[in-house]
Amino acid sequence: MKKKKILFIIYHLYNGGAEKSLVNLLNEFDFTKYDVDLFLLKKEGIFLNELPREVNIISDEYVSILFGAKKFKNVKYKFFRYLYSLMAVCINKRRKKQLRWSLGYKRLIPNLQIKYDVAISFVQWEPLYYLVDKVSADKKIAWIHTDCSSLNFSNETISFINNYFNKVDNVVTISSTCANSLEKVFSLKKEKIRILENITSSKKIREKSTQFYPKEYNKDKICLLSIGRLIKLKGFDVALDVAKLLKEKYKLDIEWYFIGDGELLEELEKKQQQLDIMSYTKFIGTKSNPYPYILNADLIVQTSFFEGKSMVIDEAKMLGRPIVITNYNSAKDQIKVGKEGIITDFGAENIASNIYKILSNKELYNSITSYLKNHDYDNLDEINKYYSLIEKGE
Image (cartoon, rainbow, N blue to C red):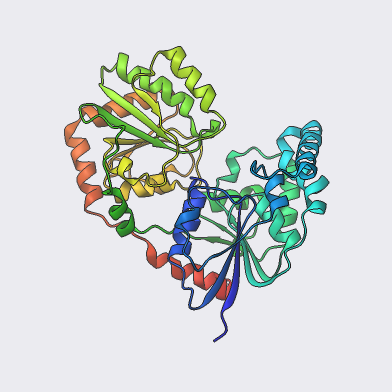
């Protein structure tokens, strides 16, 4: 039987939830039935070494430069990147990526010279534009990993993205909340939308979680952990205010670790200094294996303003760690309140009081830990739904 040729498109393989989801999926893929290419707009990221050897990585030096790769020296394409980025920002900063694509990138980037049975843009938004404008495939599928109703799109943006959604066969997302937002924001028909969970293997995660004990951790302290990109939407600036409250108001002897990197690192470090909390809040960068950090934390805290569906929360449940998350739209899709953790209202005081609630109540803390350890959160069977979508669009 002839193998089907599949293409996945993603920005890069840094330490993000969508990137981790794709790597998990590819590590479970049936390569006896499918040949898989992966096109990276920028061939970078700590997950590159975790891809199975059967995956053929495709990248283009000029495309990588346009999307911010620094290792290449082509002055011409760096100029184009700055030129079209500047033009887009001058016209409408909020629509920078769309305008940059339509003004220049769409013409500069060559078509991919391979025909595929199925091509998939695995994250929004420029991978979607590349999929539609630059790829030839019998079937095209767009993955959306976020709650679009939280993004406050303008009518122009909605119209632009709708034009691309209209040219794909299916739009896939990761939770019912995200699916509802796609219907609401983009008026997509229900029959075009599919919900597929991120693939996670509890066995592999547990194996990786025991490979070492984090050298940064202090066993004599209460260890809190947050994982995510250092961007505004993750609420880590609020987390620093929470840390100060926990130490000074609630008298908890904590150390709070943040795994991830991003554009706000310098700003967050300045706030640490201003609040005088450097001794017990630590930004420790990205980790290729974050699971020992999760396993050995006392509490996983997520202060996000919105999430599509957080893989960190799924992984914390697999490793039996209690969770406190903010009440973003899809929060109730992820945890059972009182059994797996607590959902708190936004704001430093609300978050701090709920962290104190779970840490100071041993009965509650132990019951959550026990519930998590006695439930199996593995969902490898979900991959059959991926195959069904690829084969039939069902």
